[in-house]
Length: 420
Image 1 (cartoon, rainbow, N blue to C red):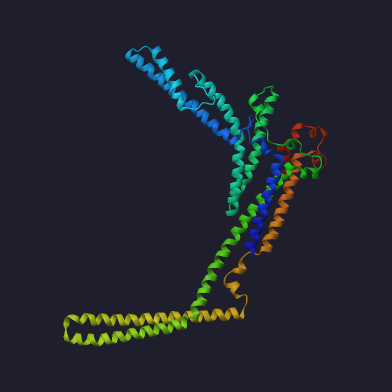
Image 2 (cartoon, rainbow, N blue to C red):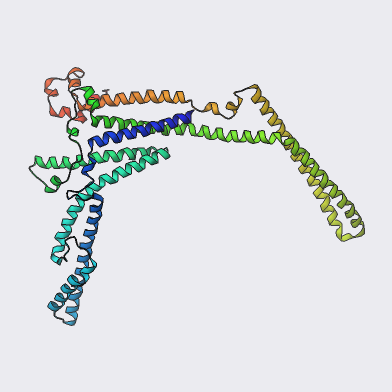
């Protein structure tokens, strides 16, 4: 039953992950990161940007190597450098450029290549910003599938962490832009990239506790915590129950072998005796012939001794096999009678009763999970909205309550720590 409990937790975890995706895509506009501002697919624009940067860089490198070679040969052989540079320009623009595909369609001059690389790199970073979200959603899906196949909480943390990182990246980027605005500094690049986050991120209701819980942002955090709780509970359940099930399967296999062998042990004993009897008769016949040979020929005396030793070994092996078969038969009869007299004997022998009950695991999970979740929600609300607690719980004076520093999460957490 404990394994069924484990499978039910996995099914619940799948439902919770789908719930996370549903809430996530309600506050994260995925259509903002699938295409560029020109309407091209981000994945195509990303690899085009990589190709363009390497095209300009490689073409410029060849150009520089050729110029260095011309200068060296002109110095050594006293060749007119103007003629060589003119030849190089014609060669690069009319012949070598056919091997390259430039975004503008025209072969650039050497002096234009650095500016073109910087322009392409600026476009590439914007595409990389958008493409990173697509990579993260793919990683989240892959690690979620791995977490279902393997009971490793690392996969679950990476699955949820990839989604959280998709929220953290825009918050960092546009938080940095807002910080620059405080110093009256603007960056056209930061102003041009899209923000996939919904405005709800800046509109979390903190005055009402139930509206606070119903907010998609807070709900996403709570559901993500529930998902990780389920993941750790699945890992714990598997760790606790797996040794018991392995031991039970091993003992049940041994009991099945014992039962099957005990049924055929009588036939095996008779077969062993019959084969031993035939072998003895063969050895007796061979022994008589060997005695005659022993009396007749001196060189064949060792053959007779060898046959006597083999006969002795056969008798010893017969005794061992019969003894082992007899013990197996007695043990099988004892186990069979024990199972008839005590219906719970099989569970006791196979250690099935030592496996944790699913009811116990479920009750423990429910109590621990509920208590931790309630504490998490209350602490989150206190840290985000500390005014009521400052006035009614801590009884702080108005001068301290109205201080801006008192509303920082660090100060609230310090106040919540019990004093010695």
